[in-house]
Amino acid sequence: MLKRLLIPGSLAFLLTAAPSDSAPITIDCEGAGTDDMCLPGEVIDEDGFRISFADAERFSTGNGFFCTPDCADNGTISLMSFVGTDPGVIRLQRIDGAAFDLLQFDGAESFIGRPDLWAPFIIVNGVSFALDFINDGPGGVADFQTFLTPTMRNVTSVTFFGDSKDFRLDNLVVDTVPEPASLLLVGAGLAVVARHLRRRA
Ligand SMILES: [Ca+2]
Ligand SMILES: [Ca+2]
Ligand SMILES: [Ca+2]
Image (cartoon, rainbow, N blue to C red; front, side, top):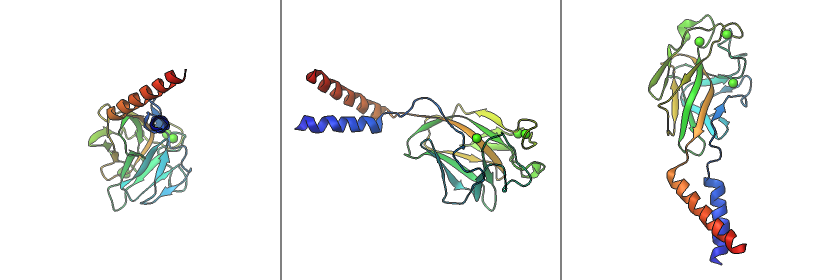
């Protein structure tokens, strides 16, 4: 009886605790609307990760109505932090709250022709990444830069802050971090399943 309970329990645990995918994931914002306006309390969920406000008035996607004139653009949907009466901080977390690595991200300026509004750098968990102030909107030169983030490992939250100025984000490359305790439990579960299968053979 105990064994009958143990085996399904172990299998269920394996399904929930095993790392779902050890390969890096690119959060490319393509699942968001082409011109969504997110207000405080709203979130964008993608691939088990959540983008939300830490302290931002709003953020939007796409390059349409909310970008007048046009904004920095990479030909796809990206996020923009608008700074209003708040610092404009955007937060990235896993929906389950577990740890993850941020490997790299793409960052850019905001409205073309308004360098007074452009963030000089994007501060990621306290580390600054300088924007190049090259931004001519859709087409033309490349507006986005790719920044590597080797120090953003095993974190449970990443915040992006433009020093109280506007910026855009896209292609947040993340990797999940399996917890050592979970791995040990997964190993124990596998051993139980293997023993069960051996006895049935
Ligand atoms: Ca994109
Ligand atoms: Ca451009
Ligand atoms: Ca740029």
